[in-house]
Length: 79
Figure (cartoon, rainbow, N blue to C red):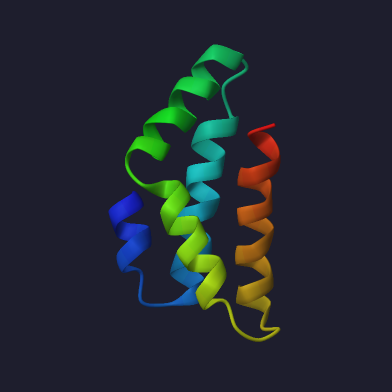
């Protein structure tokens, strides 16, 4: 998933991949499982990719806002 997100050619695809990743990580009720899933995605380079996605965000398009929402969800759920 991280590689697909990295190679996504459209903002709409990036939103879809990030939404799916957030859903996978946040769906389990077991906190230990959520932490383990997040750690696996981080090992695959998701944190660095999120930084890069934020740097390449431009404009006020609906897709840009939707992606930023998903990036914020990822950050907030880590805490």
